[in-house]
Length: 120
Length: 357
Image (cartoon, rainbow over all chains, first blue to last red):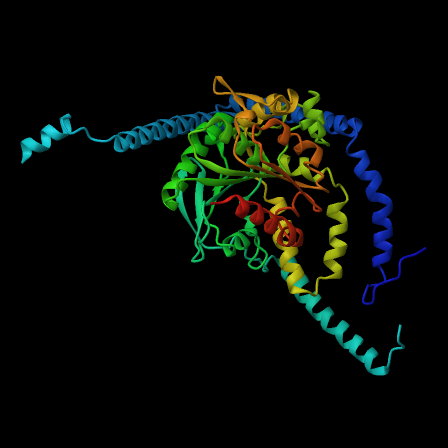
Protein backbone atom coordinates (compact mmCIF):
# COMPACT_ATOMS: atom_id res chain seq x y z
CA UNK A 1 0.00 0.00 0.00
CA UNK A 2 1.39 3.43 -0.85
CA UNK A 3 1.29 6.23 1.69
CA UNK A 4 -1.10 9.10 0.90
CA UNK A 5 0.73 12.23 -0.25
CA UNK A 6 0.48 15.14 2.18
CA UNK A 7 -1.05 18.30 0.70
CA UNK A 8 1.64 20.73 -0.40
CA UNK A 9 4.22 17.97 -0.96
CA UNK A 10 6.15 18.59 -4.19
CA UNK A 11 5.77 16.02 -6.96
CA UNK A 12 9.44 14.96 -6.75
CA UNK A 13 9.41 14.26 -2.99
CA UNK A 14 8.02 10.68 -3.14
CA UNK A 15 10.61 9.92 -5.83
CA UNK A 16 13.50 11.18 -3.66
CA UNK A 17 12.11 9.39 -0.59
CA UNK A 18 11.85 6.19 -2.64
CA UNK A 19 15.50 6.44 -3.75
CA UNK A 20 16.54 7.29 -0.17
CA UNK A 21 14.63 4.28 1.15
CA UNK A 22 16.33 1.99 -1.36
CA UNK A 23 19.88 3.33 -1.13
CA UNK A 24 20.31 4.40 2.50
CA UNK A 25 19.80 1.09 4.41
CA UNK A 26 22.33 -0.90 2.34
CA UNK A 27 24.77 2.04 2.33
CA UNK A 28 24.53 2.34 6.14
CA UNK A 29 25.12 -1.40 6.40
CA UNK A 30 28.12 -1.27 4.05
CA UNK A 31 29.95 1.49 5.96
CA UNK A 32 29.71 -0.59 9.13
CA UNK A 33 31.52 -3.59 7.63
CA UNK A 34 35.18 -4.43 8.25
CA UNK A 35 35.67 -4.55 4.48
CA UNK A 36 34.71 -0.90 4.09
CA UNK A 37 36.79 0.16 7.12
CA UNK A 38 39.81 -1.73 5.76
CA UNK A 39 39.38 -0.26 2.26
CA UNK A 40 39.32 3.28 3.70
CA UNK A 41 42.31 2.42 5.92
CA UNK A 42 44.33 1.15 2.92
CA UNK A 43 43.42 4.22 0.84
CA UNK A 44 44.39 6.53 3.72
CA UNK A 45 47.72 4.78 4.30
CA UNK A 46 48.52 4.87 0.58
CA UNK A 47 47.71 8.57 0.42
CA UNK A 48 49.90 9.25 3.49
CA UNK A 49 52.80 7.25 2.06
CA UNK A 50 52.53 9.00 -1.28
CA UNK A 51 52.41 12.42 0.36
CA UNK A 52 55.42 11.65 2.57
CA UNK A 53 57.44 10.34 -0.40
CA UNK A 54 56.65 13.46 -2.42
CA UNK A 55 57.62 15.65 0.54
CA UNK A 56 60.93 13.81 0.92
CA UNK A 57 61.72 14.22 -2.78
CA UNK A 58 60.76 17.88 -2.95
CA UNK A 59 62.73 18.55 0.26
CA UNK A 60 65.80 16.85 -1.27
CA UNK A 61 65.48 19.00 -4.37
CA UNK A 62 65.07 22.25 -2.39
CA UNK A 63 68.00 21.34 -0.11
CA UNK A 64 70.24 21.02 -3.20
CA UNK A 65 69.79 24.80 -3.61
CA UNK A 66 70.04 25.52 0.14
CA UNK A 67 66.35 26.35 0.28
CA UNK A 68 64.12 25.37 3.20
CA UNK A 69 61.39 22.87 2.53
CA UNK A 70 57.95 22.63 4.11
CA UNK A 71 59.26 19.87 6.37
CA UNK A 72 61.93 22.22 7.76
CA UNK A 73 59.37 24.92 8.49
CA UNK A 74 57.20 22.28 10.14
CA UNK A 75 60.07 21.17 12.35
CA UNK A 76 60.75 24.75 13.45
CA UNK A 77 57.06 25.31 14.13
CA UNK A 78 56.88 22.08 16.15
CA UNK A 79 59.90 23.19 18.22
CA UNK A 80 58.34 26.60 18.81
CA UNK A 81 55.07 24.95 19.82
CA UNK A 82 56.95 22.68 22.25
CA UNK A 83 58.67 25.71 23.82
CA UNK A 84 55.34 27.52 24.06
CA UNK A 85 53.75 24.45 25.66
CA UNK A 86 56.60 24.27 28.18
CA UNK A 87 56.16 27.97 29.00
CA UNK A 88 52.45 27.40 29.43
CA UNK A 89 53.12 24.55 31.89
CA UNK A 90 55.59 26.63 33.89
CA UNK A 91 53.14 29.56 33.94
CA UNK A 92 50.36 27.27 35.16
CA UNK A 93 52.56 25.83 37.93
CA UNK A 94 53.49 29.34 39.07
CA UNK A 95 49.84 30.33 39.07
CA UNK A 96 48.96 27.26 41.18
CA UNK A 97 51.76 28.02 43.63
CA UNK A 98 50.65 31.62 43.92
CA UNK A 99 47.08 30.53 44.61
CA UNK A 100 48.25 28.00 47.20
CA UNK A 101 50.32 30.68 48.96
CA UNK A 102 47.42 33.11 48.94
CA UNK A 103 45.10 30.45 50.33
CA UNK A 104 47.45 29.68 53.28
CA UNK A 105 46.35 31.42 56.47
CA UNK A 106 48.96 33.81 57.92
CA UNK A 107 50.20 32.55 61.29
CA UNK A 108 49.95 35.20 64.07
CA UNK A 109 53.56 34.66 65.13
CA UNK A 110 54.84 33.92 61.63
CA UNK A 111 57.38 36.00 59.70
CA UNK A 112 54.58 38.06 58.13
CA UNK A 113 53.21 39.03 61.53
CA UNK A 114 56.66 40.01 62.86
CA UNK A 115 57.36 42.20 59.88
CA UNK A 116 54.04 43.98 60.22
CA UNK A 117 54.46 44.52 63.96
CA UNK A 118 57.95 45.95 63.34
CA UNK A 119 56.56 48.32 60.72
CA UNK A 120 54.00 49.65 63.17
CA UNK B 1 -10.95 15.47 0.47
CA UNK B 2 -13.24 18.44 -0.30
CA UNK B 3 -13.19 19.54 -3.97
CA UNK B 4 -11.13 22.66 -4.46
CA UNK B 5 -12.87 25.87 -5.43
CA UNK B 6 -11.38 28.43 -7.88
CA UNK B 7 -10.49 30.53 -4.82
CA UNK B 8 -8.51 27.63 -3.30
CA UNK B 9 -6.61 27.18 -6.56
CA UNK B 10 -5.88 30.88 -6.72
CA UNK B 11 -4.58 30.81 -3.13
CA UNK B 12 -2.38 27.82 -3.92
CA UNK B 13 -0.92 29.58 -6.98
CA UNK B 14 -0.35 32.74 -4.96
CA UNK B 15 1.34 30.75 -2.17
CA UNK B 16 3.58 28.90 -4.60
CA UNK B 17 4.56 32.14 -6.36
CA UNK B 18 5.47 33.70 -3.01
CA UNK B 19 7.43 30.63 -1.94
CA UNK B 20 9.33 30.67 -5.23
CA UNK B 21 10.36 34.25 -4.55
CA UNK B 22 11.49 33.41 -1.01
CA UNK B 23 13.23 30.29 -2.28
CA UNK B 24 15.17 32.36 -4.84
CA UNK B 25 16.12 34.96 -2.22
CA UNK B 26 17.24 32.39 0.38
CA UNK B 27 19.03 30.33 -2.27
CA UNK B 28 21.05 33.34 -3.44
CA UNK B 29 21.89 34.24 0.16
CA UNK B 30 23.02 30.69 0.87
CA UNK B 31 25.18 30.40 -2.24
CA UNK B 32 26.80 33.80 -1.77
CA UNK B 33 27.27 33.17 1.96
CA UNK B 34 25.54 36.42 2.95
CA UNK B 35 23.10 34.62 5.23
CA UNK B 36 24.71 33.81 8.55
CA UNK B 37 22.57 32.54 11.41
CA UNK B 38 23.41 33.75 14.91
CA UNK B 39 24.79 30.86 17.00
CA UNK B 40 25.87 30.70 20.64
CA UNK B 41 24.12 33.99 21.38
CA UNK B 42 23.32 33.60 25.08
CA UNK B 43 25.35 36.26 26.91
CA UNK B 44 28.12 34.86 29.07
CA UNK B 45 31.32 35.80 30.86
CA UNK B 46 34.62 33.94 30.88
CA UNK B 47 35.31 33.31 34.58
CA UNK B 48 38.35 31.04 34.26
CA UNK B 49 40.87 30.27 31.58
CA UNK B 50 43.81 27.89 31.28
CA UNK B 51 45.50 26.94 28.03
CA UNK B 52 42.70 26.88 25.45
CA UNK B 53 40.15 25.77 28.04
CA UNK B 54 37.74 28.29 29.43
CA UNK B 55 34.85 28.30 31.85
CA UNK B 56 31.88 30.39 30.79
CA UNK B 57 29.13 31.51 33.11
CA UNK B 58 25.85 32.37 31.41
CA UNK B 59 24.26 35.59 32.52
CA UNK B 60 20.84 35.28 34.10
CA UNK B 61 18.60 37.14 36.49
CA UNK B 62 16.58 34.01 37.19
CA UNK B 63 19.14 32.08 39.28
CA UNK B 64 17.02 30.47 41.96
CA UNK B 65 18.23 26.91 42.08
CA UNK B 66 21.31 25.46 43.76
CA UNK B 67 23.79 23.94 43.22
CA UNK B 68 25.13 25.50 40.04
CA UNK B 69 25.52 23.27 36.99
CA UNK B 70 28.80 22.91 35.10
CA UNK B 71 28.47 21.45 31.61
CA UNK B 72 31.64 19.58 30.64
CA UNK B 73 31.85 19.67 26.89
CA UNK B 74 33.29 17.08 24.51
CA UNK B 75 36.84 17.43 23.21
CA UNK B 76 35.90 16.84 19.57
CA UNK B 77 33.09 19.28 18.86
CA UNK B 78 32.08 22.86 19.45
CA UNK B 79 30.05 23.68 22.54
CA UNK B 80 27.67 26.11 20.83
CA UNK B 81 25.38 23.25 19.77
CA UNK B 82 23.83 23.64 23.24
CA UNK B 83 23.11 27.26 22.45
CA UNK B 84 22.46 26.91 18.75
CA UNK B 85 19.81 29.56 18.15
CA UNK B 86 17.75 31.88 20.32
CA UNK B 87 14.53 30.05 21.14
CA UNK B 88 16.12 26.69 20.35
CA UNK B 89 18.77 26.60 23.02
CA UNK B 90 19.49 23.93 25.64
CA UNK B 91 21.27 26.60 27.71
CA UNK B 92 18.32 29.01 27.52
CA UNK B 93 16.02 26.30 28.84
CA UNK B 94 18.35 25.57 31.77
CA UNK B 95 18.59 29.29 32.57
CA UNK B 96 14.81 29.65 32.41
CA UNK B 97 14.56 26.85 34.99
CA UNK B 98 16.55 29.01 37.40
CA UNK B 99 19.82 27.10 37.04
CA UNK B 100 23.17 28.85 37.35
CA UNK B 101 24.84 27.46 34.21
CA UNK B 102 28.57 27.19 33.53
CA UNK B 103 30.14 25.70 30.43
CA UNK B 104 33.61 24.16 30.44
CA UNK B 105 34.71 24.55 26.84
CA UNK B 106 38.06 22.98 25.91
CA UNK B 107 38.62 25.37 23.01
CA UNK B 108 40.28 24.64 19.69
CA UNK B 109 43.67 22.97 20.14
CA UNK B 110 46.64 23.92 17.98
CA UNK B 111 50.28 22.78 17.79
CA UNK B 112 50.93 23.97 21.37
CA UNK B 113 48.27 21.57 22.63
CA UNK B 114 49.42 18.51 20.69
CA UNK B 115 50.94 17.07 23.88
CA UNK B 116 47.75 17.49 25.94
CA UNK B 117 46.88 14.25 27.68
CA UNK B 118 43.89 12.90 29.57
CA UNK B 119 45.77 13.70 32.79
CA UNK B 120 45.90 17.39 31.84
CA UNK B 121 42.14 17.51 31.29
CA UNK B 122 41.09 15.30 34.22
CA UNK B 123 43.67 16.23 36.88
CA UNK B 124 44.52 19.80 35.97
CA UNK B 125 41.82 21.64 34.03
CA UNK B 126 38.66 19.96 35.32
CA UNK B 127 39.16 20.25 39.11
CA UNK B 128 40.45 23.81 38.79
CA UNK B 129 37.51 24.87 36.64
CA UNK B 130 35.06 23.26 39.09
CA UNK B 131 36.75 25.00 42.03
CA UNK B 132 36.43 28.28 40.19
CA UNK B 133 32.74 27.65 39.48
CA UNK B 134 32.16 26.98 43.20
CA UNK B 135 34.01 30.18 44.05
CA UNK B 136 32.19 32.36 41.52
CA UNK B 137 28.76 30.95 42.38
CA UNK B 138 29.57 31.06 46.11
CA UNK B 139 28.34 27.48 46.39
CA UNK B 140 29.28 24.48 48.53
CA UNK B 141 28.37 21.85 45.96
CA UNK B 142 28.15 21.52 42.23
CA UNK B 143 26.22 19.55 39.62
CA UNK B 144 27.97 18.27 36.51
CA UNK B 145 26.57 17.47 33.07
CA UNK B 146 29.02 15.79 30.68
CA UNK B 147 28.30 15.35 26.99
CA UNK B 148 29.81 12.56 24.84
CA UNK B 149 33.58 12.46 25.48
CA UNK B 150 32.97 15.19 28.06
CA UNK B 151 30.97 12.55 29.93
CA UNK B 152 34.07 10.35 30.12
CA UNK B 153 36.13 13.27 31.43
CA UNK B 154 33.39 14.07 33.96
CA UNK B 155 33.23 10.47 35.23
CA UNK B 156 37.01 10.26 35.53
CA UNK B 157 37.18 13.71 37.16
CA UNK B 158 34.52 12.90 39.75
CA UNK B 159 36.11 9.50 40.49
CA UNK B 160 39.66 10.88 40.69
CA UNK B 161 38.88 14.01 42.72
CA UNK B 162 36.69 13.25 45.72
CA UNK B 163 37.76 16.59 47.18
CA UNK B 164 35.53 18.38 44.64
CA UNK B 165 32.04 18.45 46.19
CA UNK B 166 29.91 17.07 43.36
CA UNK B 167 26.25 16.79 44.28
CA UNK B 168 24.92 15.15 41.09
CA UNK B 169 26.54 13.79 37.95
CA UNK B 170 24.61 13.59 34.68
CA UNK B 171 26.15 12.32 31.45
CA UNK B 172 24.71 12.31 27.94
CA UNK B 173 25.65 9.94 25.09
CA UNK B 174 28.80 8.90 26.91
CA UNK B 175 30.69 5.96 25.39
CA UNK B 176 31.91 3.43 27.96
CA UNK B 177 31.93 0.12 26.08
CA UNK B 178 33.72 0.99 22.84
CA UNK B 179 33.05 -2.41 21.26
CA UNK B 180 29.60 -1.05 20.28
CA UNK B 181 30.96 1.92 18.33
CA UNK B 182 30.80 1.21 14.60
CA UNK B 183 32.37 2.51 11.43
CA UNK B 184 35.90 3.57 10.51
CA UNK B 185 36.91 3.55 14.18
CA UNK B 186 36.99 -0.27 13.94
CA UNK B 187 39.87 -0.03 11.44
CA UNK B 188 41.80 1.98 14.04
CA UNK B 189 40.89 -0.51 16.74
CA UNK B 190 42.17 -3.45 14.68
CA UNK B 191 45.36 -1.61 13.80
CA UNK B 192 44.56 -1.34 10.09
CA UNK B 193 44.97 2.39 10.60
CA UNK B 194 47.22 4.04 13.18
CA UNK B 195 46.59 7.41 14.81
CA UNK B 196 49.95 8.56 13.45
CA UNK B 197 48.70 7.99 9.89
CA UNK B 198 46.08 10.66 10.54
CA UNK B 199 48.03 13.17 12.66
CA UNK B 200 48.74 16.41 10.78
CA UNK B 201 51.65 18.85 10.87
CA UNK B 202 50.33 20.47 14.09
CA UNK B 203 50.65 17.11 15.85
CA UNK B 204 46.87 16.86 16.22
CA UNK B 205 44.18 14.68 14.71
CA UNK B 206 42.70 17.16 12.22
CA UNK B 207 39.10 18.30 12.52
CA UNK B 208 38.47 17.01 8.98
CA UNK B 209 39.39 13.47 10.00
CA UNK B 210 37.09 13.69 13.01
CA UNK B 211 34.26 14.96 10.78
CA UNK B 212 34.82 12.28 8.13
CA UNK B 213 34.84 9.59 10.80
CA UNK B 214 31.39 10.66 12.00
CA UNK B 215 29.95 11.53 8.59
CA UNK B 216 30.93 8.16 7.12
CA UNK B 217 28.39 6.48 9.40
CA UNK B 218 25.56 8.14 7.47
CA UNK B 219 26.93 8.24 3.93
CA UNK B 220 23.73 9.35 2.18
CA UNK B 221 22.73 12.06 4.65
CA UNK B 222 24.81 14.71 2.92
CA UNK B 223 23.04 14.01 -0.39
CA UNK B 224 19.46 13.72 0.78
CA UNK B 225 19.60 16.69 3.13
CA UNK B 226 19.69 18.89 0.04
CA UNK B 227 16.26 17.54 -0.97
CA UNK B 228 14.89 18.69 2.41
CA UNK B 229 16.61 22.03 1.98
CA UNK B 230 15.16 22.53 -1.51
CA UNK B 231 11.67 21.61 -0.37
CA UNK B 232 11.69 24.14 2.48
CA UNK B 233 14.09 26.73 1.12
CA UNK B 234 11.25 29.28 1.20
CA UNK B 235 11.10 29.15 5.01
CA UNK B 236 13.49 31.52 6.78
CA UNK B 237 13.07 29.55 10.00
CA UNK B 238 14.02 26.28 8.32
CA UNK B 239 16.97 27.76 6.45
CA UNK B 240 18.36 29.36 9.62
CA UNK B 241 18.04 26.06 11.48
CA UNK B 242 19.56 24.12 8.58
CA UNK B 243 22.50 26.49 8.29
CA UNK B 244 23.18 26.55 12.02
CA UNK B 245 23.08 22.77 12.29
CA UNK B 246 25.00 22.04 9.06
CA UNK B 247 27.59 24.63 10.08
CA UNK B 248 28.04 23.01 13.49
CA UNK B 249 28.36 19.51 12.03
CA UNK B 250 31.23 20.68 9.79
CA UNK B 251 32.74 22.75 12.60
CA UNK B 252 34.50 19.96 14.49
CA UNK B 253 37.67 20.59 16.48
CA UNK B 254 41.01 18.82 16.12
CA UNK B 255 41.90 16.32 18.82
CA UNK B 256 45.30 16.79 20.53
CA UNK B 257 47.64 14.09 19.19
CA UNK B 258 48.72 12.76 22.62
CA UNK B 259 45.10 12.57 23.76
CA UNK B 260 44.10 10.79 20.53
CA UNK B 261 46.83 8.16 21.04
CA UNK B 262 45.79 7.66 24.66
CA UNK B 263 42.12 7.36 23.76
CA UNK B 264 42.80 4.86 20.99
CA UNK B 265 45.12 2.75 23.11
CA UNK B 266 43.21 2.77 26.39
CA UNK B 267 39.60 3.45 25.56
CA UNK B 268 39.33 1.79 22.15
CA UNK B 269 41.87 -1.03 21.91
CA UNK B 270 41.92 -2.04 25.57
CA UNK B 271 38.27 -0.98 26.07
CA UNK B 272 39.49 -0.21 29.54
CA UNK B 273 36.46 1.66 30.85
CA UNK B 274 34.48 -1.60 30.80
CA UNK B 275 36.77 -2.83 33.60
CA UNK B 276 35.69 0.13 35.73
CA UNK B 277 39.30 1.23 36.19
CA UNK B 278 41.49 3.57 34.25
CA UNK B 279 45.21 4.21 34.65
CA UNK B 280 45.73 7.94 34.96
CA UNK B 281 48.81 9.84 36.04
CA UNK B 282 50.46 6.82 37.65
CA UNK B 283 47.45 5.68 39.65
CA UNK B 284 44.27 3.79 38.92
CA UNK B 285 41.02 5.73 38.81
CA UNK B 286 38.01 3.61 39.80
CA UNK B 287 34.55 4.47 38.50
CA UNK B 288 33.24 2.74 41.65
CA UNK B 289 34.46 5.81 43.55
CA UNK B 290 31.61 7.79 42.01
CA UNK B 291 29.08 7.75 44.82
CA UNK B 292 26.91 10.76 44.04
CA UNK B 293 23.57 10.32 42.21
CA UNK B 294 24.18 9.54 38.50
CA UNK B 295 21.96 10.20 35.51
CA UNK B 296 22.88 8.37 32.31
CA UNK B 297 21.10 9.89 29.31
CA UNK B 298 21.15 7.84 26.12
CA UNK B 299 19.74 8.49 22.66
CA UNK B 300 17.81 5.52 21.31
CA UNK B 301 18.68 6.29 17.67
CA UNK B 302 22.26 7.35 18.30
CA UNK B 303 24.41 6.05 15.43
CA UNK B 304 27.66 7.32 16.95
CA UNK B 305 27.26 6.26 20.60
CA UNK B 306 24.47 3.66 20.66
CA UNK B 307 22.80 3.04 24.04
CA UNK B 308 24.63 -0.32 24.26
CA UNK B 309 27.91 1.63 24.48
CA UNK B 310 26.66 3.76 27.39
CA UNK B 311 24.38 1.58 29.50
CA UNK B 312 27.25 -0.21 31.28
CA UNK B 313 28.05 2.93 33.28
CA UNK B 314 25.27 2.22 35.76
CA UNK B 315 26.91 -1.08 36.74
CA UNK B 316 30.38 0.43 37.14
CA UNK B 317 29.73 3.44 39.37
CA UNK B 318 29.52 3.04 43.12
CA UNK B 319 26.40 5.15 43.45
CA UNK B 320 23.21 3.61 44.81
CA UNK B 321 21.15 6.24 42.96
CA UNK B 322 21.56 5.62 39.22
CA UNK B 323 18.91 6.69 36.72
CA UNK B 324 18.89 5.72 33.06
CA UNK B 325 17.06 7.93 30.62
CA UNK B 326 16.46 6.86 27.03
CA UNK B 327 15.38 9.64 24.72
CA UNK B 328 13.91 8.77 21.30
CA UNK B 329 16.47 10.90 19.44
CA UNK B 330 19.79 10.73 17.65
CA UNK B 331 23.22 11.79 18.93
CA UNK B 332 22.77 15.43 17.94
CA UNK B 333 19.01 15.47 18.53
CA UNK B 334 19.75 14.69 22.15
CA UNK B 335 21.40 18.08 22.53
CA UNK B 336 19.67 20.26 19.95
CA UNK B 337 16.34 20.58 18.20
CA UNK B 338 12.80 19.51 19.01
CA UNK B 339 13.68 16.31 20.88
CA UNK B 340 16.11 18.12 23.15
CA UNK B 341 13.62 20.90 23.86
CA UNK B 342 10.66 18.63 24.57
CA UNK B 343 12.40 15.64 26.09
CA UNK B 344 16.05 15.87 27.07
CA UNK B 345 16.20 19.21 28.84
CA UNK B 346 12.93 19.01 30.84
CA UNK B 347 13.81 15.51 32.04
CA UNK B 348 17.36 16.48 33.05
CA UNK B 349 15.99 19.53 34.92
CA UNK B 350 13.40 17.36 36.66
CA UNK B 351 16.08 14.84 37.71
CA UNK B 352 18.37 17.59 39.00
CA UNK B 353 15.54 19.33 40.86
CA UNK B 354 14.47 16.19 42.68
CA UNK B 355 18.04 15.76 43.90
CA UNK B 356 18.91 19.34 44.73
CA UNK B 357 18.68 20.70 48.22
